[in-house]
Length: 406
Image 1 (spheres, rainbow, N blue to C red):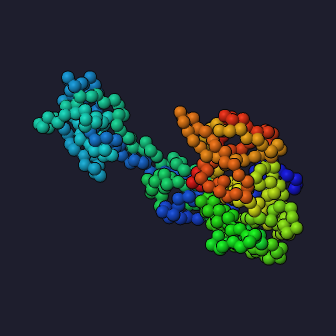
Image 2: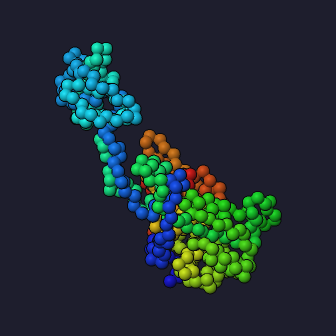
Image 3: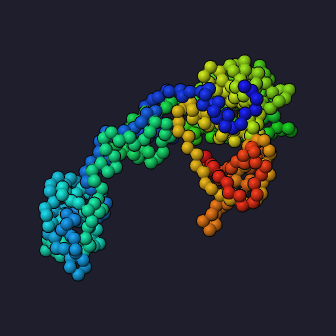
């Protein structure tokens, strides 16, 4: 069970060992962005609820305009004028037209709208139409957007600002969402000091806690930061047990390598079950995964870049599993700008910056060691060299996973 696993085996293990929490709540529409839908959302009404024009112009029966031109315009008496925000619950008579604004309602019998630019008002109650209207031209019909029973958003979707607009359009002001997963974050190490402190000899600022808090908050989790715990097994065990009691998942940063003071494996095993220690990946090999009851406990490497990649590749899918969230990854095709050697036997991940010339994207690898957090700053994404590949030549085509702004 505890031998070093491939990334694919880790994701399969997450799928088999953990289940969605299935806790839902209703939130106001104004608070729903970024939350995960707990059920499918179907429309209960037509949107729009009336036929409407997409341009300023004149509602017509298309057949009344067939064959017209600049030289021989169709002459149509003006039957009525529709004002914005009012209905048009009457019949458009044959051989006549109705003035309508963009977004305005059109009367029954309308099957086309001619843009005002192709018409002329003769000032005597008639309109000259110089361009024929095709049936359906410049019209949105009732229910073209949605109709009763149509599912517009599916369960598991993380709601975007555009989704909020769609919910507003169908009048859903209370939204069923999955309760936020609460994640406890613990940093370990005698060498760590808070970000606001001035490090002394042999000390470094805690990078992982604020980085993980930002990553997981953006992902839609509620994060509890338990601060820094020194390398004392009893103190660390106490803090981990507290986090297990108070949270849905626990991230333990540091203490995952083999060493005299590394007690993470023992603590996780005493709290529940140790599922794995080690992933065939670079950076991030000494990762630990366990569980206490149904709650996952992840031991992250202390090096910030390694912690970042393990969180992106495995922790977020794990938390997505708890939230029953759809996991969407955006990739682009690019060509690597320089040759890269790979560590045979482990999937190797590289940060990169993207540039583009002549319609083609290029990926500039960011060189750096896993302890150097600045290798992450300013990057656009990352790519992977598979474990059975010894490297990539310059110009090789790769898939880059986009992470800018996340």
